[in-house]
Length: 386
Image (tube, rainbow, N blue to C red; front, top):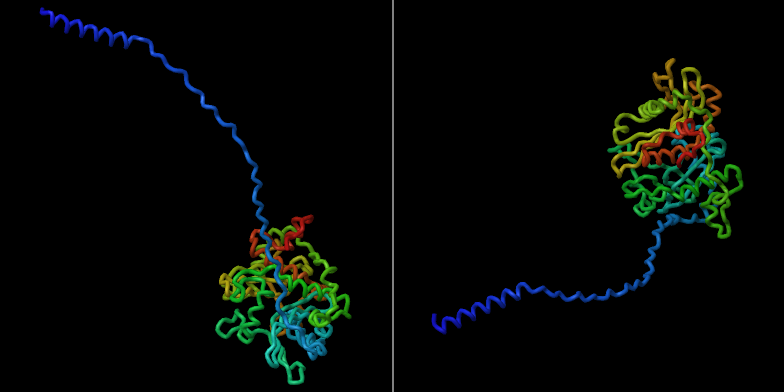
């Protein structure tokens, strides 16, 4: 081996030794440097308070103040309105004595020449019995009343009333008085505070005959109707509470009333609900005073209301065999003939119509609720819904 080769050998061997020594040496790891965490500083930001949305109270309807002649003739207006509006109730008949002391409240919605457009609510002076409706009062040139007419059924659709005789600006005020959605009121406007005011003042005038109608008081700047603040909502009082079988079969009673009050074509327009009051009963006969309403499925159609006195004829098990009502052609006379005298006297007080009708409206929105007469028997301590 040459000297040059020997030198190369030792150089390589030295390099291998150095590399091996470096690999076996312990690794020195430097200690980690702690990074201080900054202390969190919380700043309280007060929450933004969003005020609750308050539903606006329905403003009073834009009604007209009567002129001097209308104020002077207010008793004539009341008498003529009562004759027509109350006569729509078949159970009240056309007996002039009923309308002699009847009371009416009416809002003047507009006037065109010798035509006065009103919404009227009337009640009999004693007992219970009321009706409300739009009406057109046709005047003579001297301001006296020639005729009062209610809306009539359309020729093409018998269950829909024709409001075309009312000007468009008057039709725009119907929502203050209509309970359900219609062509005039796309959305329900219930509750109706204006109707409550009219009815409260009517109730007040029943016990205070010297009180003037609101339409007349509206012309007296200092007049403040006392009835609005002191008349409470009348309670629902049933003369006879249904027995256990009648409560159990209440749907059968409602179905029988609906079928008797409305022809199939009307019932097919929507759902029918009924409220009723028992006026008297024997072992197999139940005498009732009933209010039934059809709520059409089409929003453009108004609800259809019917009021009627009826007799349920039952079998020994309490099952309804048939239902009898007075003849339409001689309603009042037939009523006196087929209803016992005690029932006839009580029927003039039968009522709670305003509350029963209000509960019908409630039940259309809350179908799980039974009629008030059923609630009066199964929940004696409960306060029925409106």
